[in-house]
Length: 192
Image 1: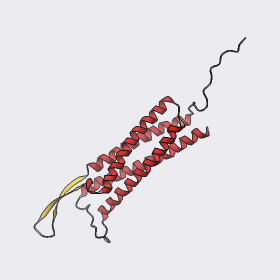
Image 2 (image 1 turned 45 degrees about the horizontal axis):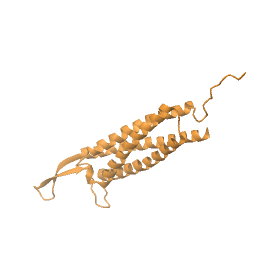
Image 3 (image 1 turned 30 degrees about the vertical axis):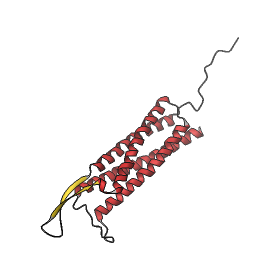
Image 4 (image 1 turned 135 degrees about the vertical axis):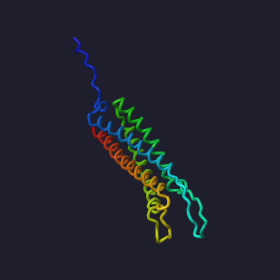
């Protein structure tokens, strides 16, 4: 008599451990937050424009002078970098959701997410630093080079730039957390 049929148990690489499942939920949450932060920073930066009537040194002449984010290469780089971060977060959120739905975590996908997160962290971090440096010069000026501060004249513009830089800093922190989480998830998969 033949022994009763026992269905094959899935291999340990196909099982989802509770810690990996929790990591995937945190991963998706962080990616959604990254999407919101990056998109907010881009929208705030793009809407940063103000026109003021500035008196010339020779009275009674004055000129309307606009201030826009497109006048600074650092701010243009900021918008481009964070737009790429918006696309990255959208695509990787979909990938994370599909991986979470299948409950199988291929190592290649985790490795790709870890690489992409690190590259995006470098890109968003450098853009945030560049825009913050230019914003600081706009706020404080630089006496050694003769650059005067402009935030006393263009207050609304400077508030937009400051808010966009602060939200981009949050996006950088989220990307740092995602990089750590992606690396940890990959480590758990290789170790198990």
